[in-house]
Length: 301
Image (cartoon, rainbow, N blue to C red; front, side, top):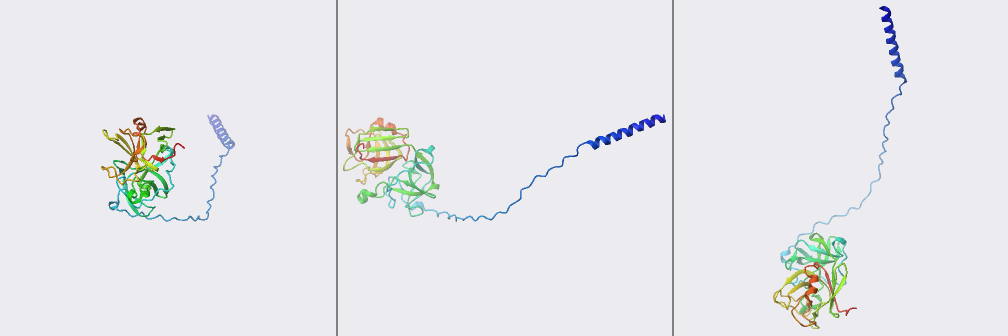
């Protein structure tokens, strides 16, 4: 029995030594490598010129200002000069830049200058949409559908009026369209962005009451007057430069493209462009407001 115990003890001791030997042969643990932290570099401070934020413009009392629309004469509106409608900054809106007036806003003679009128959010029952011809930081210069003077006072200031309005009171828009009226050739050319189509007209203004020349625009008003000599009317921003008022209802001498029941042809109208029904069908509720209309006596040249 003692021999057996001695043998067991020897075996236990041998096993213990084996465990110690195996433990001693195992690889030492791999030391953990600490990530290198980039040194923080203090750079020289950068001097940035600080621009003072202008204080908000004082609120303008619009109640005492004349409404800038076809029914009113608004003195102080600057002329268009050689400016024209700007190309659109966003082709998705159209080729030519317009602005939708989103709230009644003061119309100025220059950015931050004198408020000479109030450009309304609606003109004759439709949204006011105007061509943009110039910009300045925070401002747009737009064409307007108001006379700067009566023809009897100063014919040169009747049409091609503009105004400066705050950009924040508008929404960007555009049009692909452009219309050209040739009073010598008696044609109306429509370019809707996909091509140009030339249409005949029935009549334009007479020599004593000519269709106003130069740039004007589609206001966006489409009038239907069944039973009258002007059954369908597309209103333009211009007015006669020889007659103060021939429309008794509105007290204006507004120009338009319209259909007619009259048979006379050529340069015989009070200034409006008379067209056949199929020609007006091309424009009717299709031509976007703010589309420029160029009237020139070119004779097709």
